[in-house]
Length: 453
Image (cartoon, rainbow, N blue to C red; front, side):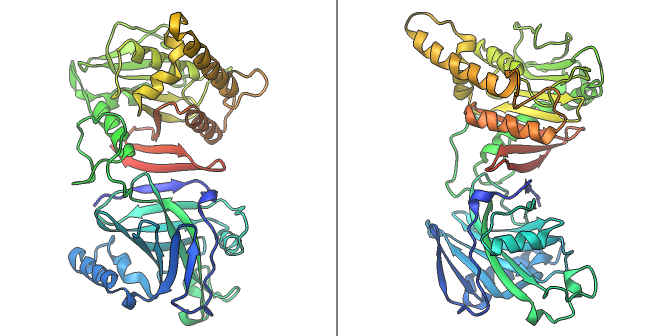
């Protein structure tokens, strides 16, 4: 069974609106929340969900993934009916957890069937976060939110509204550090509900992203999501075997390359041709590049230059990739990787070839004849973006001397989103076995979805 984790480094602030259901309310009270209808019921009142839970218990047995179904609180189920008519059902769990963590189970209707997953909220100040939500305050606490798929469907890019449900021991009534150490029985715990959005299945079915690489999607029988399509490109490239040394994959080559990041004098590189030849590029290759080869991948380092180097792709890197695309030396399946002396590792794909070409139009075309106005407009847009994020002499948003890698990543994501550049970025671990798609959220958040090679 595949497990996909989606992490939000801080709260997706725009997505949630507080609704507090107290014990005084009738269980069947209806609430209107944006385009959704919300009510609280018991599981016995929704026999199709009760039957589904029973069938999953029977089908999957009592393994670690499915035992969560035995921990749901069946008395209070939050039902959210979306504008489309599809519903989600959020369950509080009776499991014993540290006071810094809270987990809910969500069962959600999709056009393909019922999907279910857990959502875990973790923070050293979780009680403060819940209090702020419950009192309609803008959260001041950073909370890590992890969505774990435990059904047969894997995570998709769309966002759906779920309830955040919890039972809480009365304040100060613990005999130990865990919620389960409450001196009161569970019947006296307070029950509260708030609402927010987390990544969930895309009910639209299909997508209009770039061309398929031919790699099988993890979603058996389902259309690959945009993130899965981009990861498939990475997987295809990194698993390619060196034509002259079939004992090594291109992943092995870029792991070796990553070990050179502390070279003070030079950036170093590798490349993979369309015939699976692996080459070592000359130092500082983004300045001295070969435009006579067709590439599947280009990898390089940002070395330990005492003056500083970017912990992310530079604007010049992107310009080189655009020129290669313009000259037909790479295509939509191209993958670039980067390792830096600041400990970051990234993979970049071109998710929309037309958008990437359009953004760098002035870089790769002349301002002649009828296209002069287009060239001029594009030049000012491209140059303005470079000036704002990289080249400003006093306060560039992305700096070579910035050692806060998370801040640099946020600004890079803001740039490619603002520019609508048509590229996708993945964080990688040092061994290039785990890749995490990173996209920008609201108020400086980073949305993450992880894949394993």
